[in-house]
Length: 106
Image (cartoon, rainbow, N blue to C red; front, side, top):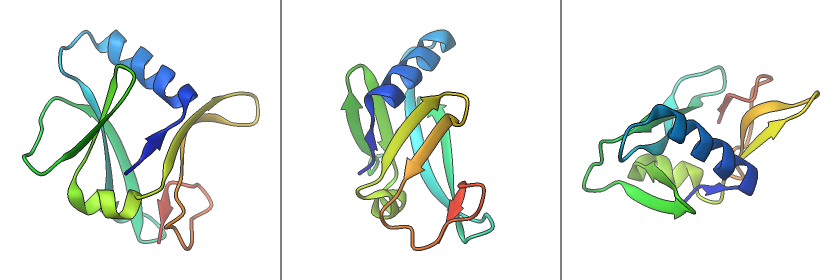
């Protein structure tokens, strides 16, 4: 399943805290679409399906559906806050090709 770096865990934790809603987890999914075939989707969610995979990184819980988990195996979610790079990025060893914006892969 997907791994979070310490920076990503800290930022996600900060964002969840600002939501002031109990039971929020970061849901990461892979959906058909984007310019390379698949695109990543991330949002906060309180819903859980029986077959969802869930993992904790400190106080941050990450939820992934089984289909997405196969495409995210070995992937890492990172967060950067610098002049050249800012925001979340996913390093996915399963991606054979990515688009220029980095938001989709095949």
